[in-house]
Amino acid sequence: MTTPITRDAGSSGFVVELDKFSGPLDLLLHLIREDEVDITDLPIAKIADQFLSVINELGLNQAADYLEMAARLLRIKAQMLLPRRLGDDEWEDPRAELVRRLLEYQQIRELVDWLGRAAEHRAERFGRGYEAPPADAPPAPLQIDLNDVLSAAERVIALIPEPMLHRVVPRPLDVEGATARILALLEQHETFGWSDAVGPQATLVDVLSTFIALLELAKRSSLTLSQPEPFGPMVITRATPREAA
Amino acid sequence: MQPLAKLLEAALFAASRPLTLEELASLEPEAGEHAVRAALAEVRASYGDEHGVELVEIAEGWQFLSRREYAETIERAQFALRPRRLSPAALETLAIIAYRQPVGRIEVDEIRGVDSGAVMDKLVERGLIEVVTRGEGLGRPLLYGTTPSFLEILGLKDLEGLPRLEELSVALRRPTPVDEPE
Image (cartoon, each protein chain N blue to C red):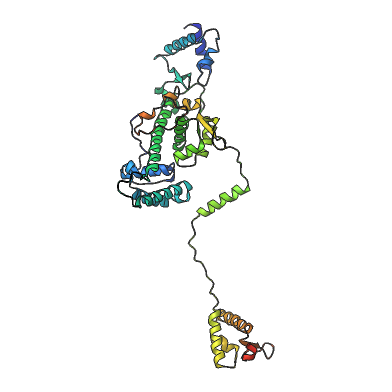
């Protein structure tokens, strides 16, 4: 068996599908082969960047297995950047473990090709009374509880891309502005009316801001509020220093 | 053909799966293994080029199988169907288990770099792997091995029919095999 591993070819260029990769190692091997780089002297920075961009593209960054590999690659990349003394025999290549796993996995892929061919070959001869397995084996009875369903739903919901919606932000009340305005008025006038406080052409927000500011100032004893007659205009009076104390 | 050969022929014809040497020998306990082997050879020889089926040694047993050259025609007529192909994930898992058996799930996950639980459950369901023992480690994990059905779908006589790791283009340190065929 010296046939090199071949992926399901037929795809030219870099067309990626989720099903095409059976795991992060498979994707890594694919990238390594695309770049025709030496697996034992992995250009880790380049491969890590490619890996990240591919899993982003595929939405695989949601999958824990791929994320874990991404993290591993970045860590190795960082370790490679650390300075090391010349002739340091103790230094262990941070890529060693990954390279070992990749080689091991590559071997498995080669066996997969062999097994696939053997199965194809075997399928060309029929035994007596052979029955093809049913198209769909009866699914095993589900063993799930409500929590499983809920967490599955949450996972699915999390995958739904955020819809393009404009967030409607209510115009905030400008209580501080109204307070400043009223304090300024208090400086100039002993007494003034509601319409002075609100100002001309007041919007609903202005009215609310002013009203809250007045209540707040009254609470702080900066002013007193009075209404001489029912439904009459409100009168705002500067508090005397005694009262304020 | 001698009577024992005819008996074996009938039994192999009747069975829809490979019959092992022991099973065949049990048909005629007095005959002895040597005689059974000789009779098998006789049956096999008489199904030479003259016939559309042949006696094949497969999955640690013997079975009549139709000849390869008729596969397409039989299939086109839908008298028989090819088994469904195994997915790459299933084949990966099978490869690891075949070479490292008995092996636990964690090791399979580790080599594949992905969670293989669902794939392994499916393979157990299809009868291609089975739990063979329990490991020594924490929680005494279940250890899996391949079944005769695994050999059958690959058309292998036994596990020694698998390629040796040394023969692969990727040379690698040997794993820590427990029961690896040499």
